[in-house]
Length: 447
Ligand SMILES: Cc1ncc(COP(=O)(O)O)c(C=O)c1O
Image 1 (cartoon, rainbow, N blue to C red):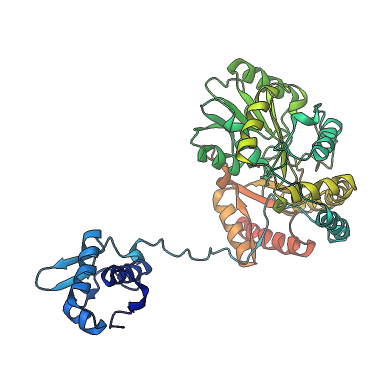
Image 2 (cartoon, rainbow, N blue to C red):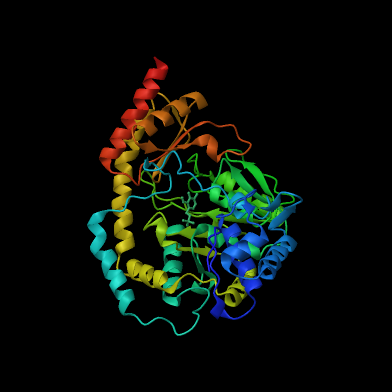
């Protein structure tokens, strides 16, 4: 049985034909095949088409009228309603962003040297032959991995801890999320300009974000429960938090009973001096330390670690035990092998050399036109320019096939303008072409 409506009824299906018909018409509306304002055949005509009694079509129409999918207009028929038409309710299909297909000069993308691919493969082969845990594993993470990470933190960052005080996470923002669940309600202060993912994470959990001017000493944290900072390499301006300001920040946190969240995302990548010890090395009871494998190995690994202040540890672990929110076992197992076999040290050393060579190249190209936002370390540098010049340069880069971020995109109440240029995730040739596009636009603007 079929009709001018694309509806077929199945007499063998059992159940009421009226219910079957109302379901079919409802499906057409939901799918958008019938849209707002479409007129349905009369119940008599539809019954004739389908070869059923009129009571079947009337029952179906009455049901859909009651549900609001249809409306009867006296003298003119039965119509699909505005509210019932799913096509109208469907979100508009997102259009591809204008920047699709461009090579991204992202601040957060590291150089992954293809020469080390064999070590990567070896680690994953080991994962493939290791038996997975039988049930949900230790929510804190693999004990061997925590032991290696704790040892590394002590040696390279001056953070002394027992492996049981460290929690393996799915990356920095995951660690931040776990920490926030253990903190009392209240606002979180975040550097401005600052790490956008941290802002989104805090706001997404329903907390107020307070703007902490990134370059001003922090002396008062009254009323906040936590304060998020990047002391080794302010993101995105680049400054190292000076010693006296570290002391003042910790004093302010103690006075306000706030936790300082230290995002130590890329401290391995200093190429002028040795990495500055972590803030957590000064006060483990006050600082929550966040580390990540995103810069040393790959952002897509989604692996990080959190060292919370000891008094929050049990609360975080108890919750993770119930929610099974541990980091995936294969990723932990692979990272364990990568750390243990020296892969991580090797890729960090290679990438550091690459960045140490590229950073001055970027500086040589841009310094005639722009002021550095701070000392250069890691895999990006930030350049202060007028917004008009920054936009001109960004647009020229786009025309040449590259996408890079405007500094204004990291600002909330701060009014800094310029460019944040990542030089890790591109080839030398791509970097040269991007710099040529930028300098030619900035040179023209100067001229
Ligand atoms: C300031 C900052 N912190 C942390 C990260 C790493 O985050 P995740 O570990 O979630 O990948 C990034 C990555 O770009 C970053 O820019």
